[in-house]
Image 1 (cartoon, rainbow, N blue to C red):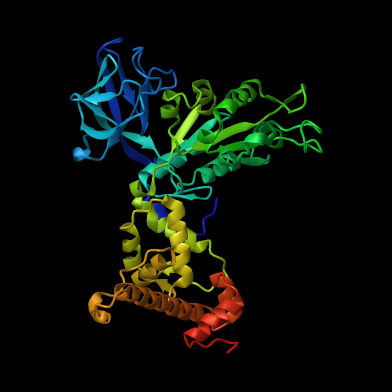
Image 2 (image 1 turned 90 degrees about the vertical axis):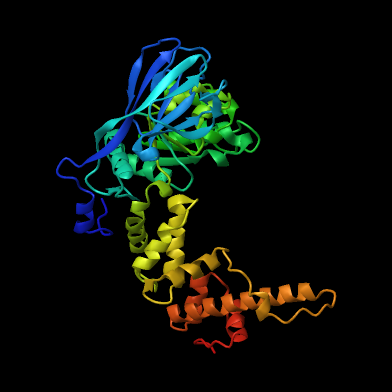
Length: 468
């Protein structure tokens, strides 16, 4: 476990005594009307599924209910008594007060209509959920309750052989979770093989997964192992499993059930010993309802599942993540090594649609282009220019008066654009020179711009470097 990017005081802030318990809310559900009326259940997961499938957390016997019908979770809205409802593209919909819902927050005690079933949902009293004592799991960082609960769950799952499905938005670190689970498992000394399901060529899909024999098809000049045999005695990570073509899913299911592969061009099965981890940003339960993903394959992949929350739901983790990303910058790189309190506040106001991945890029750009040793709000404003967030052009009063000549408006626009670009270039080049001690070669490497082009830009703006 790496420990060079947080200190003892930070660790203390995430402890709640020796037990390291965190407070969460569960949901109580009861079938008020329909098949199984009177059945009750406690949903203790942060997000739980209600549906007809045996893989749901609360199973309904109503044939008009979809396999995975609705997702429920306790919501912080409505004074802590709200229920987040997400319909999973169910066939007959999820209704509240006569209205069909796709995503909504309803009050505790509300009645939902799912097919012919009426379900009452109540926010239960808080309960103590086990949380990790440290804000670290592998390369993951998080001091928030949600992340420490996740770390504790992952620590337990790492010791098992269960197939694990990691769900969450793009950029939340799903591959880091898979790698950390592998590294903490009894298979850590074995291979960790990653397969990006979005990048499998349709014509080579079976060969990629299961391998092929020499001369199995045109271009097969030698025998090649597939990713499952390559991962033998280790772990295979199927990234973006929701993108796997439907026609390939039964073949993958057969491999998972039989624990053997048959290479293309062969009839001989080869046993494999692998643990399967999968990840997706898609909602596989909704895809099952839409017949775009096989339910039996989902059973095999999701023997256990975890959900990574988006960054906007765990903003308390931002300072810890910023420190972690700064600590991972090369030691010999001339850059800022900390953020001012005002700059951190600025980060907390951003949306970060790209989640932790976007935050990492922001921190690295700001650190490398900062005017001093500490990133300030002004440096963050400059960083936004680098990724395409341009300020408004100069206002009309600062421009030449309108002439009335045809094409004058276009000329004024071009002048404003040229002025803005010139200001950006000069500011950026001055920062490069300050960061690199006026060294053209280092400035070229840091900016990712050819030396001759960068030299021309310096001359254009009258800036001097070690080559003139």
